[in-house]
Amino acid sequence: MCTAVVVIRGGGDIGTGVALRLFNSGFEVVITEIENPRVIRREVAFATAVYNGSMTLEGVRGVKADTLDDVSNLLKDRSIPVVVDSEGSVAAALHADVVVDALLAKKNRGMSKDMAPLTIGLGPGFEAGSDVHLVIETNRGHNLGRVISKGSAQPNTGVPEAVNGYGEERVLRAPCDGRVKNLLNIGDQVKAKERVCDVGETEVCSPISGVLRGIIMNGMEVSRGLKIGDIDPRGIREYCYTVSDKARAIGGGVLEAILSVRQGMQVH
Image (cartoon, rainbow, N blue to C red; front, side, top):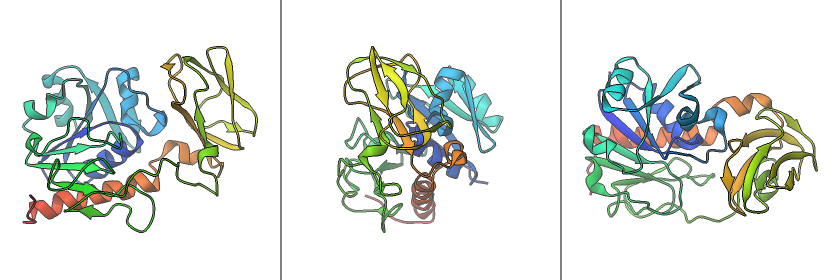
Protein backbone atom coordinates (compact mmCIF):
# COMPACT_ATOMS: atom_id res chain seq x y z
CA MET A 1 0.00 0.00 0.00
CA CYS A 2 1.37 3.41 -0.98
CA THR A 3 1.18 6.05 1.74
CA ALA A 4 2.23 9.14 -0.21
CA VAL A 5 -0.10 12.14 0.01
CA VAL A 6 -0.99 13.62 -3.37
CA VAL A 7 -2.70 17.00 -3.61
CA ILE A 8 -4.46 17.67 -6.91
CA ARG A 9 -5.23 21.28 -7.79
CA GLY A 10 -8.57 21.16 -9.58
CA GLY A 11 -11.38 18.64 -9.36
CA GLY A 12 -12.79 18.86 -12.88
CA ASP A 13 -13.21 15.79 -15.08
CA ILE A 14 -9.48 15.44 -15.82
CA GLY A 15 -8.36 16.06 -12.24
CA THR A 16 -11.00 13.60 -11.08
CA GLY A 17 -9.74 10.95 -13.51
CA VAL A 18 -6.24 11.43 -12.11
CA ALA A 19 -7.57 11.26 -8.55
CA LEU A 20 -9.36 7.96 -9.19
CA ARG A 21 -6.31 6.41 -10.83
CA LEU A 22 -4.11 7.31 -7.88
CA PHE A 23 -6.71 6.50 -5.21
CA ASN A 24 -7.28 3.05 -6.70
CA SER A 25 -3.50 2.52 -6.65
CA GLY A 26 -3.37 3.13 -2.89
CA PHE A 27 -2.38 6.79 -2.65
CA GLU A 28 -3.96 9.25 -0.25
CA VAL A 29 -5.52 11.87 -2.51
CA VAL A 30 -6.73 15.36 -1.65
CA ILE A 31 -8.38 17.70 -4.16
CA THR A 32 -8.32 21.48 -3.81
CA GLU A 33 -10.84 23.75 -5.49
CA ILE A 34 -12.04 27.33 -5.67
CA GLU A 35 -15.17 28.48 -3.87
CA ASN A 36 -17.40 28.39 -6.96
CA PRO A 37 -15.91 25.98 -9.49
CA ARG A 38 -17.27 26.40 -13.02
CA VAL A 39 -17.30 22.70 -13.68
CA ILE A 40 -19.03 21.46 -16.84
CA ARG A 41 -18.94 17.66 -16.60
CA ARG A 42 -20.44 17.72 -13.11
CA GLU A 43 -21.39 14.02 -13.00
CA VAL A 44 -17.73 12.97 -13.31
CA ALA A 45 -16.09 15.74 -11.28
CA PHE A 46 -15.31 15.65 -7.58
CA ALA A 47 -15.50 19.46 -7.71
CA THR A 48 -19.27 18.93 -7.52
CA ALA A 49 -18.78 18.10 -3.82
CA VAL A 50 -18.13 21.80 -3.22
CA TYR A 51 -21.81 22.40 -3.99
CA ASN A 52 -23.44 19.14 -2.89
CA GLY A 53 -21.26 18.16 0.06
CA SER A 54 -20.25 14.86 -1.52
CA MET A 55 -19.87 13.17 -4.90
CA THR A 56 -19.57 9.45 -5.58
CA LEU A 57 -18.03 8.27 -8.84
CA GLU A 58 -17.26 4.67 -9.80
CA GLY A 59 -17.63 3.63 -6.17
CA VAL A 60 -15.26 6.28 -4.77
CA ARG A 61 -16.58 9.08 -2.58
CA GLY A 62 -15.33 12.66 -2.67
CA VAL A 63 -16.43 14.72 0.33
CA LYS A 64 -16.12 18.42 1.05
CA ALA A 65 -13.71 19.02 3.92
CA ASP A 66 -13.81 22.28 5.87
CA THR A 67 -10.82 21.73 8.16
CA LEU A 68 -7.56 19.82 8.22
CA ASP A 69 -9.10 17.53 10.83
CA ASP A 70 -11.86 16.77 8.32
CA VAL A 71 -9.20 15.95 5.75
CA SER A 72 -7.44 13.57 8.13
CA ASN A 73 -10.67 11.80 9.08
CA LEU A 74 -11.79 11.42 5.47
CA LEU A 75 -8.43 9.96 4.45
CA LYS A 76 -8.74 7.41 7.26
CA ASP A 77 -12.25 6.65 5.98
CA ARG A 78 -10.82 5.98 2.49
CA SER A 79 -12.56 8.94 0.92
CA ILE A 80 -11.17 11.81 -1.15
CA PRO A 81 -11.34 15.15 0.69
CA VAL A 82 -12.30 18.13 -1.48
CA VAL A 83 -11.07 21.36 0.08
CA VAL A 84 -11.80 24.95 -0.91
CA ASP A 85 -8.28 26.39 -0.91
CA SER A 86 -8.13 29.75 -2.64
CA GLU A 87 -4.82 30.60 -0.94
CA GLY A 88 -3.07 27.39 -1.97
CA SER A 89 -2.01 26.54 1.58
CA VAL A 90 -3.32 22.98 1.93
CA ALA A 91 -0.39 21.23 0.23
CA ALA A 92 2.10 22.79 2.65
CA ALA A 93 -0.12 22.13 5.67
CA LEU A 94 -0.38 18.45 4.72
CA HIS A 95 3.32 18.14 3.84
CA ALA A 96 2.22 16.72 0.50
CA ASP A 97 4.62 14.36 -1.23
CA VAL A 98 3.23 15.24 -4.66
CA VAL A 99 1.29 18.21 -6.04
CA VAL A 100 -0.46 17.85 -9.39
CA ASP A 101 -1.77 20.90 -11.22
CA ALA A 102 -4.96 19.79 -12.97
CA LEU A 103 -6.44 23.24 -13.53
CA LEU A 104 -5.99 22.85 -17.30
CA ALA A 105 -5.66 26.64 -17.51
CA LYS A 106 -3.17 26.42 -20.42
CA LYS A 107 -0.85 28.57 -18.31
CA ASN A 108 0.85 28.35 -14.93
CA ARG A 109 -1.36 29.70 -12.15
CA GLY A 110 0.96 29.73 -9.19
CA MET A 111 2.59 26.31 -9.54
CA SER A 112 6.23 25.96 -8.50
CA LYS A 113 8.69 23.19 -7.79
CA ASP A 114 9.04 24.13 -4.14
CA MET A 115 5.42 23.18 -3.41
CA ALA A 116 6.35 19.51 -2.88
CA PRO A 117 9.19 17.02 -3.40
CA LEU A 118 7.48 16.17 -6.72
CA THR A 119 5.35 18.55 -8.75
CA ILE A 120 3.52 17.61 -11.96
CA GLY A 121 1.81 19.91 -14.44
CA LEU A 122 -0.87 18.69 -16.83
CA GLY A 123 -0.75 20.05 -20.35
CA PRO A 124 0.62 23.30 -21.80
CA GLY A 125 1.74 26.16 -19.60
CA PHE A 126 4.44 24.28 -17.70
CA GLU A 127 8.08 23.53 -18.40
CA ALA A 128 9.49 20.36 -16.88
CA GLY A 129 12.62 21.11 -14.89
CA SER A 130 11.73 24.77 -14.52
CA ASP A 131 8.39 25.53 -12.82
CA VAL A 132 7.46 21.85 -12.27
CA HIS A 133 9.46 18.65 -12.11
CA LEU A 134 7.45 16.74 -14.71
CA VAL A 135 4.74 17.46 -17.29
CA ILE A 136 2.06 15.13 -18.66
CA GLU A 137 0.87 15.47 -22.26
CA THR A 138 -2.86 16.17 -22.42
CA ASN A 139 -3.34 16.62 -26.16
CA ARG A 140 -5.26 13.69 -27.61
CA GLY A 141 -3.18 11.65 -30.03
CA HIS A 142 -0.05 9.52 -30.12
CA ASN A 143 1.56 11.14 -27.05
CA LEU A 144 -1.49 11.43 -24.78
CA GLY A 145 -0.44 10.63 -21.20
CA ARG A 146 3.28 10.76 -21.98
CA VAL A 147 5.59 11.78 -19.11
CA ILE A 148 7.80 14.72 -20.10
CA SER A 149 10.96 15.22 -18.04
CA LYS A 150 12.38 18.09 -20.12
CA GLY A 151 10.46 20.73 -22.00
CA SER A 152 6.74 21.34 -22.37
CA ALA A 153 3.57 19.67 -23.57
CA GLN A 154 2.19 20.44 -27.02
CA PRO A 155 0.82 24.01 -27.26
CA ASN A 156 -2.87 24.74 -26.90
CA THR A 157 -4.56 24.61 -30.30
CA GLY A 158 -7.58 26.60 -29.16
CA VAL A 159 -9.82 24.09 -30.96
CA PRO A 160 -11.87 21.50 -29.03
CA GLU A 161 -10.94 17.92 -29.77
CA ALA A 162 -13.10 16.31 -32.42
CA VAL A 163 -15.60 13.63 -31.41
CA ASN A 164 -17.23 11.82 -34.32
CA GLY A 165 -15.96 14.60 -36.54
CA TYR A 166 -17.39 17.44 -34.42
CA GLY A 167 -15.07 19.91 -32.72
CA GLU A 168 -16.24 23.42 -31.85
CA GLU A 169 -19.78 22.40 -32.85
CA ARG A 170 -20.16 20.23 -29.75
CA VAL A 171 -19.31 23.03 -27.32
CA LEU A 172 -21.96 25.35 -25.89
CA ARG A 173 -20.71 28.85 -25.11
CA ALA A 174 -22.38 31.75 -23.36
CA PRO A 175 -23.73 34.16 -26.01
CA CYS A 176 -23.64 37.05 -23.53
CA ASP A 177 -22.97 37.91 -19.91
CA GLY A 178 -25.68 36.71 -17.56
CA ARG A 179 -27.08 34.04 -15.28
CA VAL A 180 -27.54 30.49 -16.58
CA LYS A 181 -30.94 28.83 -16.42
CA ASN A 182 -30.74 25.14 -17.34
CA LEU A 183 -33.65 23.54 -19.18
CA LEU A 184 -32.10 20.10 -19.68
CA ASN A 185 -30.08 17.81 -17.43
CA ILE A 186 -26.82 15.98 -17.97
CA GLY A 187 -27.62 12.68 -19.69
CA ASP A 188 -30.60 14.04 -21.64
CA GLN A 189 -30.77 13.37 -25.36
CA VAL A 190 -30.75 16.58 -27.39
CA LYS A 191 -31.53 17.33 -31.02
CA ALA A 192 -29.84 19.86 -33.26
CA LYS A 193 -31.27 23.38 -32.69
CA GLU A 194 -33.00 22.26 -29.48
CA ARG A 195 -32.96 24.76 -26.62
CA VAL A 196 -30.67 23.60 -23.82
CA CYS A 197 -30.47 26.60 -21.49
CA ASP A 198 -30.78 30.36 -21.30
CA VAL A 199 -28.14 32.94 -20.41
CA GLY A 200 -30.06 35.91 -19.15
CA GLU A 201 -32.83 36.37 -21.70
CA THR A 202 -30.90 34.71 -24.54
CA GLU A 203 -31.64 31.14 -25.61
CA VAL A 204 -28.79 28.68 -26.08
CA CYS A 205 -29.52 25.88 -28.56
CA SER A 206 -27.46 22.82 -29.42
CA PRO A 207 -25.75 23.00 -32.82
CA ILE A 208 -25.79 19.20 -33.14
CA SER A 209 -27.69 16.13 -31.96
CA GLY A 210 -26.33 13.92 -29.20
CA VAL A 211 -26.39 13.62 -25.43
CA LEU A 212 -25.83 16.48 -23.00
CA ARG A 213 -22.57 15.32 -21.43
CA GLY A 214 -21.99 18.44 -19.36
CA ILE A 215 -23.66 21.70 -18.39
CA ILE A 216 -22.51 24.38 -15.96
CA MET A 217 -24.28 24.69 -12.60
CA ASN A 218 -27.75 26.20 -12.78
CA GLY A 219 -27.79 29.83 -11.64
CA MET A 220 -24.10 30.43 -12.34
CA GLU A 221 -23.11 33.91 -13.51
CA VAL A 222 -21.08 33.62 -16.72
CA SER A 223 -19.37 35.90 -19.20
CA ARG A 224 -19.75 35.95 -22.96
CA GLY A 225 -17.76 33.23 -24.73
CA LEU A 226 -17.32 31.02 -21.66
CA LYS A 227 -17.79 27.31 -22.23
CA ILE A 228 -21.00 26.32 -20.47
CA GLY A 229 -21.92 22.95 -21.97
CA ASP A 230 -20.76 19.90 -23.89
CA ILE A 231 -22.73 17.82 -26.39
CA ASP A 232 -21.47 14.29 -27.10
CA PRO A 233 -22.48 13.36 -30.67
CA ARG A 234 -21.99 9.65 -29.91
CA GLY A 235 -25.23 9.82 -27.92
CA ILE A 236 -24.20 7.19 -25.39
CA ARG A 237 -25.73 8.20 -22.06
CA GLU A 238 -23.44 6.00 -19.94
CA TYR A 239 -20.44 8.09 -21.00
CA CYS A 240 -21.88 11.00 -19.00
CA TYR A 241 -21.35 9.14 -15.73
CA THR A 242 -17.94 7.48 -16.08
CA VAL A 243 -14.39 8.79 -16.40
CA SER A 244 -13.37 9.43 -20.00
CA ASP A 245 -10.65 7.57 -21.87
CA LYS A 246 -8.62 10.79 -21.96
CA ALA A 247 -8.81 11.34 -18.21
CA ARG A 248 -7.81 7.72 -17.57
CA ALA A 249 -4.82 8.04 -19.91
CA ILE A 250 -3.63 11.24 -18.25
CA GLY A 251 -4.16 9.62 -14.84
CA GLY A 252 -2.00 6.74 -16.01
CA GLY A 253 0.73 9.20 -16.98
CA VAL A 254 0.64 10.80 -13.53
CA LEU A 255 0.79 7.38 -11.88
CA GLU A 256 3.78 6.43 -14.03
CA ALA A 257 5.53 9.69 -13.16
CA ILE A 258 5.08 9.21 -9.42
CA LEU A 259 6.14 5.56 -9.42
CA SER A 260 9.16 6.31 -11.59
CA VAL A 261 10.40 8.94 -9.16
CA ARG A 262 9.74 6.67 -6.17
CA GLN A 263 11.83 4.00 -7.89
CA GLY A 264 14.79 6.33 -8.39
CA MET A 265 14.12 8.44 -11.46
CA GLN A 266 16.03 11.73 -11.15
CA VAL A 267 14.08 14.97 -11.58
CA HIS A 268 15.41 18.51 -11.77
